[in-house]
View: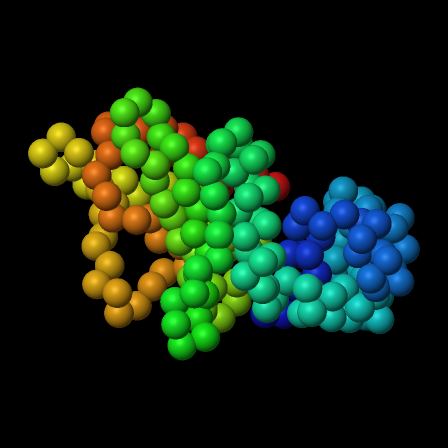
Length: 187
């Protein structure tokens, strides 16, 4: 990832200008002006860009499971989903997944999504939200009146975010799709 891409991704994140400033020493006004589009990342002084890029590398490029769980909780809260739980689960061999579970509409059970941070070398807030949005929109395979995710994972390899393979009603599939659209458009 190029330095300018790291800086832009940092400025597009939900991290406040104040927090970035405290961690990097870059003025809040400079960060805010770039976030608002008043200044371009390409015109930033190299020393400033390097500080922001270093912050990206330390805080966001190698996210901890706790940070990922926070991002998932925050996203579900922002789209008004009353989640039941977001937990970190031990998968053995030092690997962990982050699991989010919440109720659907109607009589369906809850649905679960897992984030597998080791499945992608460059896990970012954006990639997590895009993966979650895609997984929520993936319940488009119909069998005997129930809707399932299009794939069935054999356990050998994971995508960054995967839905649990379970059947849900068409109403719940539509609801999940609308949630996925909301998550995709989160800033």
